[in-house]
Image (tube, rainbow, N blue to C red; front, side, top):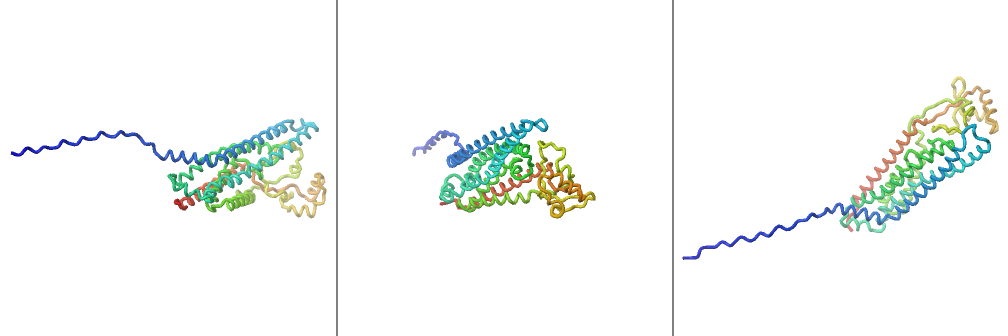
Length: 360
């Protein structure tokens, strides 16, 4: 009789392997990109921070001097000697403030050239960009990681400068008796240095990505900024329909006015050549009045000039202007245009990065 068949015992089941959580690589990659950005651009960022601090200190010291001059005396309380000293100090401080505000207004162009452009153009020129993208870091993470670091630092520094510019522009308005609606004072107010810095920094990145060469991109950014400044000076007065008002000759001469009072923040559009108006409301062009009637009266003889105008039946001046009540609206419009340029430049940069080869 054959032996009964035996069934082999089942193989022992190995114990389950110990499991441990593996950290996601995404966070490490983002931290790596941020650290790489800091390592590559730390001297630019540190230099920008030191330059901003120096400008802020310079502006604060001069603003304190201007404020102390404004506080010396007011109106008829000023003796002649004090008034002359006050005017001299105000003139000196407002001149310096003008240089400071012009510097801040021009800084976005420098930002676009020396921080924005090299972000991609230098990598293309040195052929290091494709190598970076062939590693674990995707173009999207590489780009937005760098933009996050640079944008945060630039935005913080530009916000600090914008706040100080608001203060200084207000003092220049009082000291130099200039409208906040004009030229540099307008561009230095309304937080425009902040939006200009963001817009032109991003425009520099997009230009560098498109041209892939530093020097041509520098030229394009500088030329575009100069063109934008000139264009907006021409377009700004016409962003909204102007209003008109008639000023009497007595008011134009400033009879009874406080010479220390601040001027209105209006943007006058006639360039100092507003037409004259007679008692019937008819307009007489500036060139006609000055060329045929009263233009031969020497400067400094305001009473004789006014008398000449009155002899010809003229009673006032018809001005075309943007009133001070629209100052905030105009700042909002231009800040919107700046942020629009930022958004378009960001989209163009991303499109160019996506189209670029990602293999060596």
